[in-house]
Amino acid sequence: MTTSDQYRDSEQLLLALAEQLKLPLMHISQHIELAKMGKEVRYEHIESVADMALHLIDSYLLSRQLSQAQAELQFEPVSISSVLQGAAERLDKIAQEYSCDIELHLSGRYAPVMGHRKSLEAAMVSLGYSFIEAQQESGVRKPRLVLGAHKSRWGIVAGTYGNHKELTNDMFQRAKLLHGRARQSLPTFGHSSSAGIFVADSLFAAMSGKLHVSHHSKLSGLAVTLAPNPQLILV
Image (tube, rainbow, N blue to C red):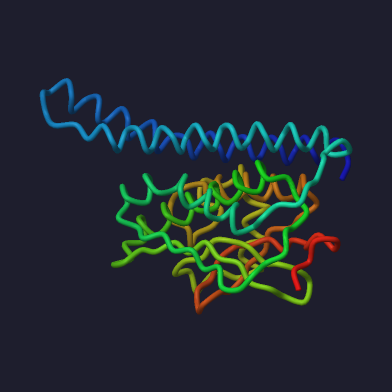
């Protein structure tokens, strides 16, 4: 990828992020107005949406740092089970606000994967946030977010899944071209810019990973395929 391509991608991601941040800021502003009128304010909601907004900003900044220092990025053996567990804990509050159940699907034993733990967890949280928000907007009766992993012939597939049967690879590839240019680049994910998805994609790209459409337990979602550490494969 040329320097101009990297700059364009970074600019598009920043525009998508700016569009995404309007929603939590609007929520906070509305609660402030309620407080001024002496009405009851749900401070837990303000805390949750503000936390996710800060997470998206931090993850965007991390993706830029990793992209610039890709040659010096140090990979290490990482437990994917631990990463998904950490992401689930981080997403718990915002999931409760949107009445969304979080499930971990980690059947079997997995060898450690080679990666950058902080970036992997940040990417999974960003993905999860977009999935939670999308299901809330679509009016799904019982929204659920599944953080899951399974083995494939190429490695360990880890990602986030929900009720998005219409999600396809073609749709996702078009969305990657449109994000930052269109307010709603991924129609199946509601009216937001789905910036969390593209922040995650940027983080995975910095680790030479590729976000792709995946299926798990009859659910559709987005995942990355990670290579196990050949020296630590479990028997």
